[in-house]
View 1: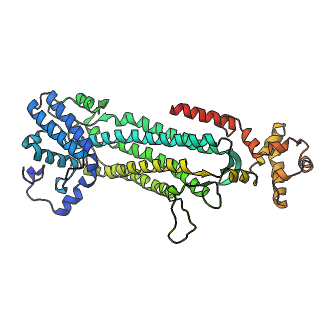
View 2: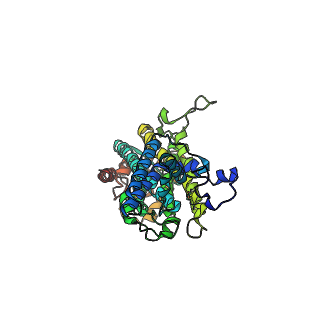
View 3: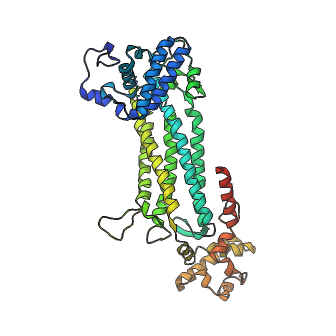
Amino acid sequence: MSNAKLWGGRFQATNEEWVDSFGASISFDQALVLEDIKGSLAHVKMLGATGILPEADVSLITEGLQTLMEQAKNDQLVYTVANEDIHLNIEKLLHDLIGPVAGKLHTGRSRNDQVATDMHLYLLKQVPLATELITKLQTVLIDLAEQHIHTVMPGYTHLQRAQPISFAHHLMAYFWMLERDKGRFEDSIKRIDLLPLGAGALAGTTFPIDRHLSAELLGFSKPYANSLDAVSDRDFSVEYLSNAALVMMHLSRFCEELILWSSDEFKFIELSDTFATGSSIMPQKKNPDMAELIRGKTGRVYGDLVGLLTVLKGLPLAYNKDMQEDKEGVFDTAHTLEGALTIMAGMIETMTVNVAHLEATTKQDFSNATELADYLAAKQLPFRQAHEIVGQLVLFCIQNNIYLADLSLETLQAAHPLFEADIFTVLQPETAVARRNSYGGTGFEQVKAQIHEAKALLA
Ligand code: ARG
């Protein structure tokens, strides 16, 4: 075999250098080398089992592929842009190793079903990795939550202090988001678990191949039922990107909170030095860079998702070269997601929670105002009236520079005779939290039950 293109038969002029490099995907699809060789090993085995290739050829090709697999694992393969993509590079390397019989490997197959197969195999590896990392992060959240069931902090709406909550409750909110994220990834497996191989270029093949055998050899449940669909859809990659985008959205919101919480304005937590960096000019600075980067990298994952959707939106069936653009975003997202989940777990595991400061904060605000209104409503004053009365008390406090707990019983009773001395216990943030004992609420007992349920899910 000369240096000519593997598909060069019908061509007279050679490509310009720019055309070669613009068209090549080897710079990035080499990430699929193990999947590509794995797919070829199964394909050639099937070609032997169906009698399409003689066993002698099958053995030669198999041994050659196994050698390449070893070399690939040791990073010893050298690829060329002239050979365009991972599939042609491997075929060329196989030819260099075993001679022209290498050319029989591509019998009954096309790069179209081959590349789709590689991406399915790739994601069948990436999805379990994502769920494993999510579980690790969930474990870290549960561990920290268990230490802070009774740590009271301000709960917010509109980033204004709303009602006191348990710090563990706040942490566990992210546990449940991640639980759904994990569920989405797990559910997606049944749509990745379909084998495109054997679809050929688009229409199937004249060879008596056995696609069910190929599926079995590669660990897929079944082959795609329609060859056009098999080679031309990338919905499984879009779904992966979408699931990753949701994880990143959740992490990004949490990171935004960590950034706020570690500021001098909040002082709720301190990030470990390992996950923070200094400033080159301001000696006092300790910046939450890792949290900011996770928040920032959420943008690139969204970009990967929208990028692929956009690539696909106008494509006629079946394969189009546009689809070569499906890979870099998926690789980029896989890499970003792995980093973000790992960093996030480390950051939370090592941060310090300023318990005393958190609790002091809840005593210097009006986040117990609902307690007063609920108190009156529980004594059958219509809630709307109770709300109005407490609103006036809040205004009175603001004008006199005091908090609700500083009001005297006389003042309270003047506002409404239903107030009695037990109101002062009710006003304590700890009491406010403890009494929100409705299912899923922040009451300490509910939080304990929630953590118990969460642990059972991970067990
Ligand atoms: N490198 C190509 C891709 O990633 C492989 C499939 C090429 N098929 C073709 N008909 N040119 O999409």
